[in-house]
Length: 317
Picture 1: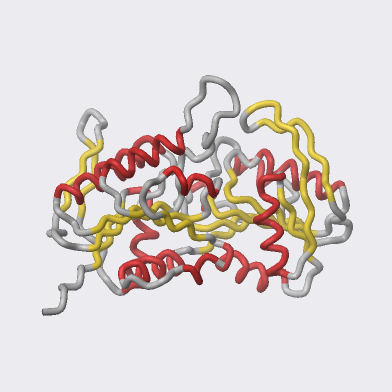
Picture 2: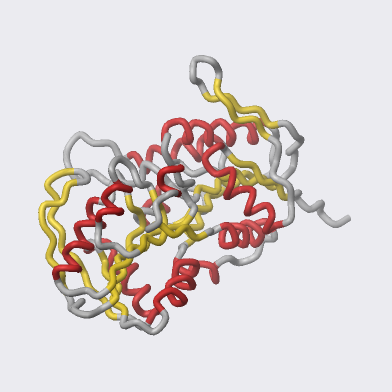
């Protein structure tokens, strides 16, 4: 007798319901029925309302603001499916929060990215599917398989259409993003520039120097995430001073906390291109400079191939 095929089931926490709905439409399956709410004292409450025994379960949840609540919802969902005897549980985390503290750079600080990895694994995840990790080494914090997808194909497709035949320079906002920017520039047949920034504290940049020629160019600032937009907007100002003709921002994760929207509105940026790995708040959606691209097809295809035990390496380019 042939082995029974595991049934594909997709569930979502509160942070990614619109994205999960889009993924389910792509895969032509219904979104799983799970109640994710809170008790009157604010504790997270999870209840799965359908049978998942022996199923291949994918739980979609970004660890975005409110990060503590969304992380707890993810952990409780994973634990619920483990106790409900799901055959395999994959945590689909479009935005992996707590990733910025991934090593000790000063005394007496946690490595939060490792702690969160341990929590997710202990809660019952069999594998991880994520998007544009803040640093690739985080994959090594897990003792289970990790697939780190890149939003590059989605961003490139839009940029090729948006920039048309402009002379383009891809700009890395720091030394850590050079590899990403170089790969992007190669695919766009564009030049490369790097910004040397000096920080005086978290989210505070003292000065910026541009390495490369952006005079008369269409400059595209490329990063994995934008938080307070301080670095992004200061870099845009520096590019304008150096004679860049048009300035775009491009990132996967639009954290956009604090005064980020006001800074973007007041900056020389023509457009900030982001994905829906993090759901945008209403005030962010109303910002005319922000263009949101969907990664539902990319993640949906990765889920389909994982479920069918097929290679997903072609999605990494």
